[in-house]
Amino acid sequence: MQIYLPIAELSVNMLIIFGMGGAVGFLSGLFGVGGGFLLTPLLIFSGIPPVVSVATVSSQIVASSASGALSYWRRRMIDMKLAMVLLFSGIVGTAIGVFVFNGLRKLGQLDLIVSLAYVTFLGSVGGLMLTESVRAIIDARHGRPAPLRRPGQHNWIHGLPFKMRFKRSKLYVSAIPIVALGIAIGFLGALLGIGGGFIMVPALIYLLRVPTNVVIGTSLVQIVGTMAVATVLHAVGSQSVDAVLAVILMIGGVIGAQFGARVGQNIRGDQLRALLALLVLAVAIRFLIGLVVPPDERFTLELVSGGFVP
Amino acid sequence: MTRAVLLATVVLAGLTGEAGAERLTIALSTPEVKINSNFTGTSLTIFGVVERDAATVGRTTAGYQVAVVVRGPGESVVARRKDRVLGVWANNASQTFLSAPSFYAVDTSTGLSDLAPAEQLRRLQIGFENISLIDARSTASSDADQTTFREAFLRLKEQSGLYAMSTGVDFIGDTIFRATVWIPANVPVGHYAAVVTLFSDGTPLATAEDRIFISKTGFERFMFAASRQSALVYGLATVILALFTGWLAGVIFRRD
Image (cartoon, rainbow over all chains, first blue to last red; front, side, top):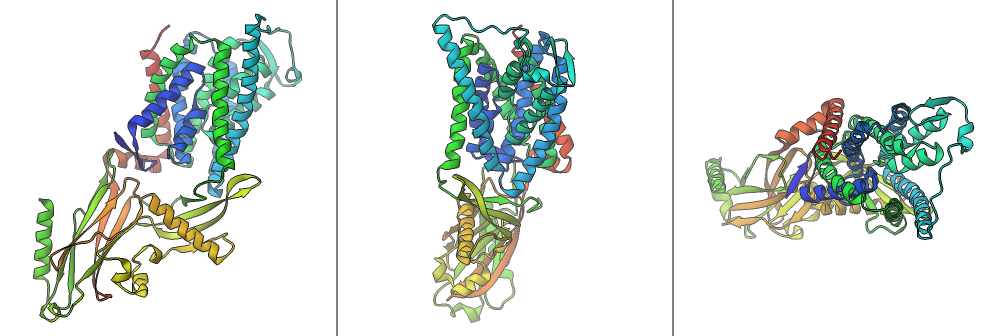
């Protein structure tokens, strides 16, 4: 069932795209992540231009994160103040990200930087997650209890100035790391077409000591906001958001996520994290292979923007 | 049915033409290609008739040959070559082709070498190697290097289906012919030109030209125009759509 994508300007099989959205949605529901880091590469590997993939996935992430954020909102599991600080710094990061994205595109180095960034971030986050979760699984096997988080525990981050109070998270912490985190996630999100939840959640838990019950909801609110801004900026900056592609992905994604979430409830947390880590590492390795293995076709063509007027 | 009518029109048009040397009259199966949501490509048929007068009837011994060239609007394309830089394959040298045809399909009744001498084909831009590509801003080191860029450009265009070469022109009798050109789904929109050249004994006798307009229609046209002309509204609308989809999913699948 072929459908013509008006912005990507090519004809794709609607069921395959729908299936991709559904499969990634399933995994995102299973692991509680946005899935952008899987969906964007999948679209690129299936022949959608990288520019369109990155820009369109940002709108798909809005849809998938919004339904999650709403559910956490109803359960009052969001620290709105923290989310807003993250969001506003995230918007700054997104604007820088879209600017860099268009600059790299003009230089012809977008694909390279996107690949390098995927290898670096997914490789390191995946590696960390895998070590942590494997250790947790081994501990559980040996009957050792998981290490408890001591409330009084502080790290260097808690010594920074410009402290802010976050009542919902019971935190009194410097605004500097929060703003830096927001900017970094926004930047990466706009550049790579990812929501960044899989970086944000561990950073909030391990660096800022945000209580785990508000972490996911807060991170989702921030992702909805920054990805919405990214969508608009991509639409204005590179005019490459394909709404038809986005709708197919959104519908597939939200349906898949429901099934994923149900399956996820029956799997233990550490095992889920280990599986997610393997998935993240697999994507990183796929990009690494693309970088180091000699390509079959060394040449690529790209339309110089404004090349023809329809 | 429509083809028969078209053919009849062409024949009539040919017959009522003024007398002279060979005259060429062509007609297209459709002057407009509309791209809609289920567009997966379409074939374009070009009918032609050669009208001869008494002076020319006996002249040709080799019969007629025909070359049909369909060209899309010009575009600027940058070709990039990956080289190994610090252990990874990265885009390195590049070459920009200014005003290269976005689409180029040639259909001939015989192989190019039997059609006309090389210089004639070059002048008429018949065949891939004869397409004039104005190259500029090259970072290729040598002329030989530049040739590889040109070859790569042609190869990639051919792979994407936007450049095509075939020898499928069909003569129905001595003076009526039909050529078919495939317009793929990834075709750029704009004004296309179909140029038909009639040859005999390697000499071009007559040419005829017609235009085809390829455009998006209905919803596809609306979406494309909106994304270009009111990008901000388009972006905001996409976000609202995404929020609505997320909200709807939350309502439908609500469990708590």
